[in-house]
Image (cartoon, rainbow, N blue to C red; front, side, top):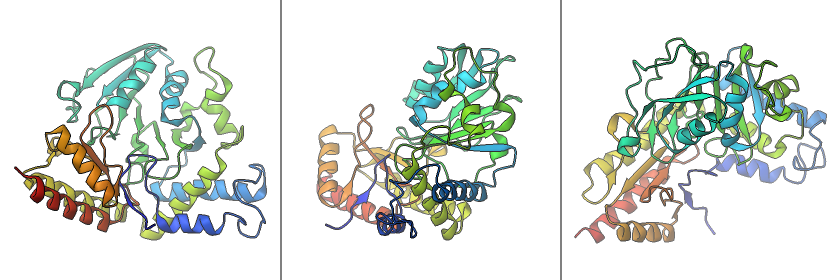
Length: 361
């Protein structure tokens, strides 16, 4: 069977070149006589894999020397707890709630101290990013938290919030490596790999070194302390070795493409094809305010649940899969991450035009 165009929000499409390389190395990684799935995480061979992956990521993002790169487990959800456990020295934190995952992170932080929601877009079903230029930031806040790109609702911070000197923590799961970032503007950046970087099971955290201390909330388990992982170069326990290996291959693929400036141009072009169609369509409608639109996740609806279901069914049969919107919002969503080729978006729009002609009443 031919490969489909996979618009899943995650686990998501990976570069075909990377998958072919991994397939060729499945039984024998570079003459070692074994698969990466089988080798010890303490071996010299794997040590090179993880170190190369970290260096390539540092090159791609120009990560300053005073930031640690950690390959962790537990999904982004575990970071919802790890961050307050490690950072909430004053037991105060400010959260900007722009979607489901920011809301969950905020609720988790409330277990550890006085977490406040200082801005939200829930009043309009998270269809926009609120103005964050002058926020009521608590003078005792240990950090300000955002989810930079909202996978479910398709919004993205175009300008980072004015944190008034407080540390900024960002969940970047669904926009990680889609464009250049100035890492020095953040205290912590973290993201699950399964959206734009690799397979499920790896979380990458980039953390400013002064935040990695033994001064954590009482009772914080050893495995949930950033210092545990930083002191052991992400090898305190057995890491998700195969996932890290695939992430490393994706980093090399990104460098080969020309880096993050090139990816940003490509992603803007892909998103424009889809948004331009939605803006003039008589049947389909985007659900996000224009100035808050994500380049990665594009939600849209017809306004008729039965027609949405018909579209999803026919699109799937035509080879455009995983277009169903998140169960909490319905409708459709096309996730067009780095590995989605431009022709995938062009063909999807051609299919949508045909569907519109056939179904417009």
